[in-house]
Amino acid sequence: MYNFDLGRPASVYFCGIGGVSMSGLALILKSRGFRVSGSDRAKSAVTENLEAQGIHVFYGQKKENITPGLDLMVFTAAIHPDNPEFVAAEAYGIPMMTRAELLGLIMKDYELPVAVSGTHGKTTTTSMLSEILLAQDTDPTLSVGGNLRSIGGNVRIGGPKYFVAEACEYTNSFLSMFPKYGMILDIDADHLDFFKDLDDIRRSFRKFAELLPADGALIIHSDIERLAEITEGLACRVFTYGNGADDDYQVRSLTFDDHGHPSFVFHIKKSGKDVPVALSVPGEHNAFNACAALAAADLLGMDAAASAEAVSNYRGADRRFEILGERDGVLIVDDYAHHPAEIRATLTAAQNTPHDRIFCVFQPHTYSRTKSLFEEFADALSIADVVVLADIYAARETDTLGVSSHLLAERIREKGHPACHDFRTFEEIEKFVLQNCRKGDLLITMGAGNVNTVAKDLLS
Image 1 (cartoon, rainbow, N blue to C red):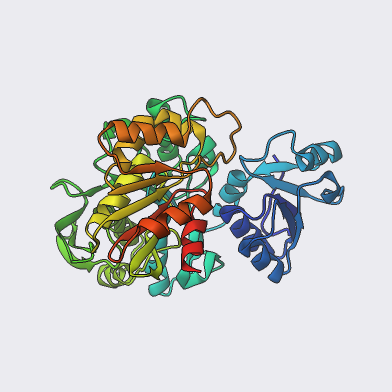
Image 2: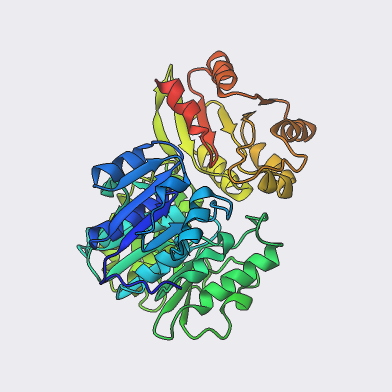
């Protein structure tokens, strides 16, 4: 592997620099004096921000963008060996590494690096912990998987002590990290275009837990099935969180206000301390995300009352039950949920929000996920009063695997939910919504693709 040294600035090229994580890493290297450039398919708010910071961005990935003078090329899992920039870098003998490998090497440079993993809730929990550290003036470096309003983006360049980053399991990328503190929020069947099955995913999370050093700690949700398989025999300390009497950090006395915002008592078993928490984001799942963030903050030595206040003031990251506005009395919300468990959590939270009917405009993300979790998608989406399906967002895939949004809509109707519709274009969806939504309805655009375009168009 390339002998990467943060103390020796070099010339680094990011293939796919417009991605959330890639852009953050590019900015971190830029702040350390590296000469940074990169490419992406099209101009975006992210690439425009990079250009404003003095980073040259090529639009369109071409072999001509790669020059022999580069010291390193960084690429994502979406870049394949036949990519023209990848081919050119190999031809010139330019060292290459994955985004995850670079993130891991950067993480090694910090005294207290924290990696937040789990199949759901990473961005929210990372954001909550970020808010806690910011409120207590720790000057953290942050790498969040979504835009956090308080830092005006997805990355913050701070001091050398605290570094908080999301740790994604896809392609085992989180196994390239070097955290001292790790979090596992849950383990669910996902990314089955890479993993063989749930057991394969569990093995990967076990390997992630084994990365933690003896003087580090793992914070893990006690609801995870066969928990001992993940935690037994680890070198690090293990702390559980949940609502069980044996958990080290507990959610107690959970209640909800008229808008579905949870309040609870955060109980620290070791000290017996009880700290009241009242969240400004909806859903039971967010109470447990907050508990995980508060647990990490406690282990990092933060004041519990100040941490609870920071979490209570957290208003959400972009695309996480993000209230975008109203049109003709219809409340329009956007959410990144793209797995049945996330859909169920988001729609359950929406049920506790004032509404007449819930319209869910969902765009499935990848053919493989839709096929492998077909029945689970049908069940979860049926929580909404009206379901509207967009075409599947292919992302990195080309094989349809014989699955489609039309087939999913048929299955939802077969399950006794007649108010399910599917359309080929966003224009058709917007027309349907304008004709059928009425004052008092709650409209949620949902998915990891570009379905939020529908919400923005309706509001504009």
